[in-house]
Every structure is written in structure tokens, then in C-alpha cells.
Length: 141
Image (tube, rainbow, N blue to C red; front, side, top):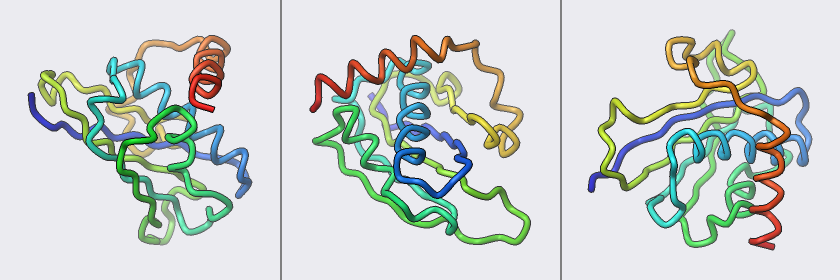
């Protein structure tokens, strides 16, 4: 088993605590489900936000999904003029037997423009995904 990096990013419309948490939970759920990640195999995760987001730590969303024993860290992405605003990024370090080429990175919402080459993922039923997120949160409350 090796440690692989899994990347993802999403955006929000507003610097709002609940919006940041909801978008981050959705992003993590997509990453988890597209890669079949078991939280026991997650070594750590590093979240960044653009400097215009400071209403909440996105790592809290991972805790809400049950990543209570996973080392998590948050920081701000460096500011580059003209870069995508209101963006949340994550790098997950995942212990897996999968080859790096078999890892599915997820770029969601307006963050698709960051890596259009990686955005060819199967369609997702967002209502079903939200139900899965709610179940995870209830189990880990």
C-alpha cells in the first residue's frame, strides 16, 4: 500500500460559514465516493481557501463526516491576481493500493476551470449525495 495524493476544489458564492461547510462536505463526498475512500485509510488532509474566505475552517466539514482521527490542517492559498475567487481546495493523503493514474481528482462548481482536463467524472445525483452526507453527519454527531 502506498500513500497517494487526491486533489479537489470547489467554490462558494459567499463568505458564509454554512455555505463553506456545505460546499466542502459535498466536495469531500464526491472525492470519497469516486475513489471509494475509507476514512481509516486517510493519512491526512490539507485544506486551503482563497483569502476572501474566512468564515469557517473547511476542515470542520471533514470532522462532520467522521474524520475525527485524521490529522487536518487549513491555510490560505497564495493570492495571485486574476485567480479564481472564493475557492476551497483540498489535498488528501490516502493510503491505497490504487495506482496514482487510477485516482480521481474532483473539481466542482466554478473550480472546474482550474483543471478542465480532470473534470470528466460520471454524473452524480446531488439529492442522493446530500442524503449520504446527512447520514454521515448523523452517524458522527
